[in-house]
Image (cartoon, rainbow, N blue to C red; front, side, top):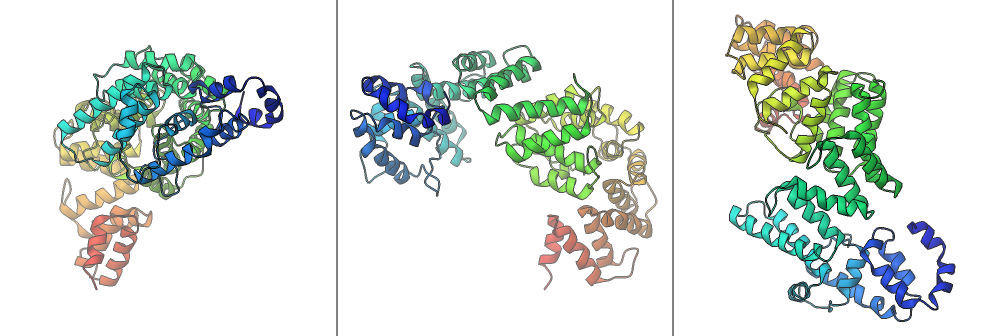
Length: 503
């Protein structure tokens, strides 16, 4: 029964409660009921039971005041730590209206076997750990072990959310040895009991082949079970997968427009930390290349740049400008992105190109720059300007191939001749410095201007530099500052520094 259905049938429910008050109270406080109703609805339902009224008249507010004093709430008063309605009720029974943020009462309840208290302690410890990024590694290990101990205690008495968090620990190897099989077993137990988060997590295991054989159809089946319960997260996971299938023509007709529409939906509506940044990244590429929509290179670049985060480190500098930052990652987001690019690598040049970028950096896979260069080379020969730019960078710095400035300049020139703004910028750099070609400031200026007029922030900085130093053009500080400002508006750090040192 859904929350709306239960709420709309309160009159009927009141009639049935006259003889079954205790049963109804137990039913509402049971964890299996936790996702069906919000706390306010449960409070409304419980108030019709005289025997349960004392649970709600003052105990829950006491618990919330304690959470406020303990610094566990957002500014709007909402808990930082997600607790089910039944957890909040169970904890409120033992919480006094204390003036301090002491946790001793919580620890006492956990030691006595209170599952809600054990789970809550684990979540508090995780929040503390997240705040202490600079903590000593041995201290972090100790805290992770404490978290797992509390989660296991709660999970042993069938606390659903504790089982879900414990499964995540096994999945990521936090506080325990990484064990995808054990994680999958826990997810399956939750999924079989109808817990939508467990169904989505199990779907993710099948999608990634973690602890089970990879099977996209079974993954979608589990996502669908969650969607059938009204889970928006389950629906968006299906939308996300089908976007990739449309993009690469996997089991369906290839359609850039359909892929873009689905990725856009996930990018704007999902809160999932894994699929949201991947979908947003792909939306950026679609606009950058004009696939499924009118080409808007600057819009695409901005989306890719703004989407970069600690969890998803592929931004404009790394992906488009091939700046060799250290973005090696084995995070779930990185691994999922690589696996999906690999899935489409035989059908779609962009998937193959992005797979090579991942291999080059070790993003979601083992770093292998020789392998990456071997993927970029034939893509460059096929005329893809971004791959031409990348193979040029491989030859320029000796990434997976022997360093060769002439071959680097050849790759860059092919990219620039196709109007690639990054290729134009770097060809300008080669002409400016005499790398792989005779130094020629005038030609460098021409290429920087072409790149800048397309809105490329790297080209704009270099063009400003030429005007500032009088290279290939008469010195003109005002024009230099104008180009620095355009570059700085897009976040170019060197341009910022140039502007800062001027009055």
